[in-house]
Length: 432
Image (cartoon, rainbow, N blue to C red; front, top):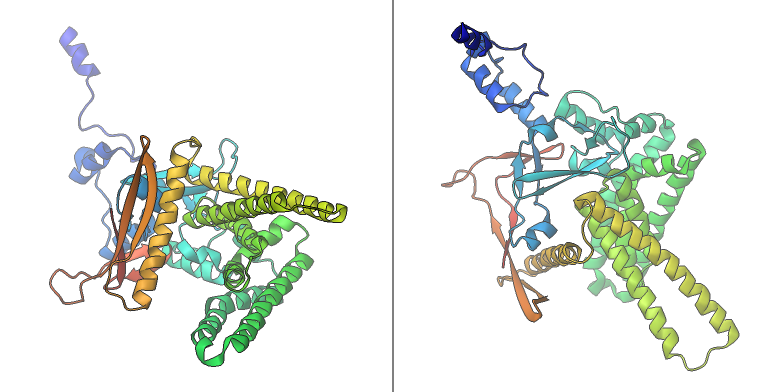
């Protein structure tokens, strides 16, 4: 009788529950489905359907997190992979979480205070998320076979046609026309002369600023809430980024407010991204340097009139306020990307790693532009257990194998919503 009870209590190996949804992530179950156990048979799909599923489910970036890779003494190589839990999240053009890949792990962090039960979303379209509605909808349709219905797309669809066209025109000019004119002015500087080049650059800078202000005013007429205006200004981010690049190029002391505008937009559509973190870091460092320079200037002045003292006090107060805002923005970017980290420890190392990565890219770009064969080097000074150490990073550019050559492959990799044929092209490798 005991044997009969034990046999009744033992589960039937062929007995299966009703087929679960894709939310069921137990590998053992899907192995049984593959083997046809319990009468369950996996649904057959064509190769085209399988590729579409993979394209919609995979996650890829040009580099793993460069700051974390430097701290871990690894090369920040590109990757493509499928994390099942991550694949279940929806896309949003104003996401509430960020993803960072370290090693083989994909880490998801909330980028805002979320109530229990709030759906998590993140950016699955890549850089096209900074474009206006039409481009984002086309990318989403291609990737998922349906339009995006996030809050940003829904709001942008209510714009009057004239304002929508204005936003589209700003984006297109910032992506193509203005950068081409900037490059042409810089390349012809030697022949045209410094004065004429400065006039061309000033004219272009004024044109960019005027178009940004015009769009901002148009959105203000249609949308009373400033947060809604900023949400839709994200589609013109390329223009704000170009405005800062030109300010940095032309001004002896660049206006950091233009960089702060970039941070304000990034924290809406790309909060916790590498770009958000790096831009916030540059703003934080710039504000700190301005404040330190002002303190040194005040201390070096022998005599100060009352009027001069009042002006200096007002300037120091303004710098303190902007510096505090920049510090908060940087701390927010760190927490959105990495979660809560100890200030003394990882944060300075991540700062150095990120700065080294971008310094290396700049060195590599300059070397390639000048046609140099030498491998560029970037050095950094560290102190390990009280011992000063100089680390030299070398950056190498290599090329993928040519199609048809031995070892060559035609790889289709998704960068956000775009498919890229990676047959050849520059690749950055970091060596320590």
